[in-house]
Image 1 (cartoon, rainbow, N blue to C red):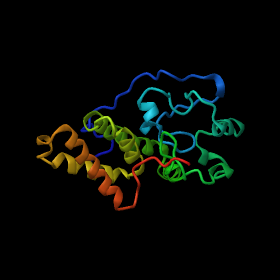
Image 2 (image 1 turned 135 degrees about the horizontal axis):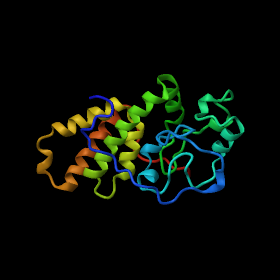
Image 3 (image 1 turned 90 degrees about the vertical axis):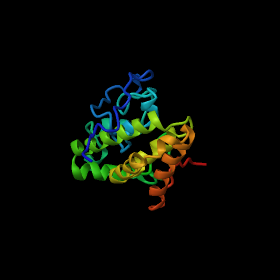
Image 4 (image 1 turned 30 degrees about the vertical axis):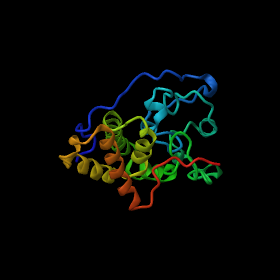
Length: 203
């Protein structure tokens, strides 16, 4: 399956409703798929729900964005001579409304393969996520699918989608049963690497 395949359908792109605060005046970025600090904004439920415009267009102050302004407006933290700094200690331990568990790993991958290639992979992940949310979200699985598409490798996501597409009995199930089956496919793949497909919040 090629990167940016259109077989999953087009992602839902709407104009964000709540962003544009001047709390980070001067901090602007062109790439709305991947944040300064390693978050996959294109796979974030806040961006998908049109509540945030992505890194550089958000509605909250950010200490890492402020740090970027103080260090020559680096586009990604790995471009900074001081990376990884103390801000990245324990940064992967807990999630917010988006999983944080791959921030350092994804920054390293983007640096290794180049941001253009990384964005191509993210675009295919966005198409997969959009397809899942449009067809298999029974009202309780948005966070599950967002976490799954963030934490699983693209090859694992392609494996899951192929398994789902080849199941010719899936359409015979009730909608609720279809959603449960699809979630189970992703969970079994995640279990192979002991990945928890849920947000881990700090207590």
